[in-house]
Image 1 (tube, helix red, strand yellow):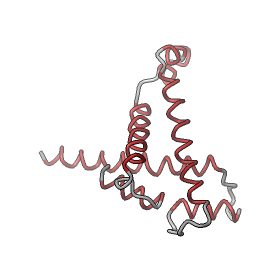
Image 2: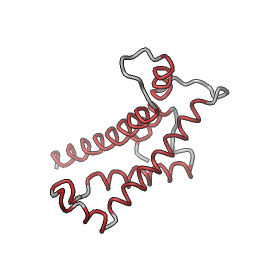
Image 3: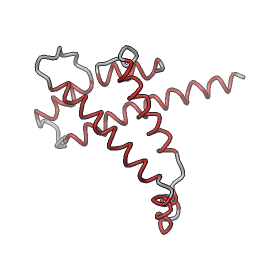
Image 4: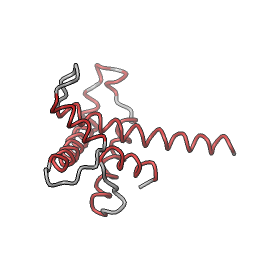
Length: 141
């Protein structure tokens, strides 16, 4: 896992995934597949009437499967953070859980909101950093 990925995991989840081999491979696989699926071509995006081709090519099924696996992964993270015997690290997930419990914001946070924020933080954060680094090296050469 890259430095950017480790930093974002540490800040958002309170964990480093370079230490835990199985979790690291699982998480990397899920995120890499999600990134590949997100930038893929879907007929329904451009030609809504041809959306059935996405089903035919199984792209919709792969996307749905990946989303369910990521949902399970984020739920495991949330469950770990809800464990009262866990040492509090005050990462972003802890703050989101506090906001959810306090109902102090104008938006009622749900578990789906929290999972979506975690997904945005990680996928957008690592992809943006990687894109910036590769653009800079491309410009230099």
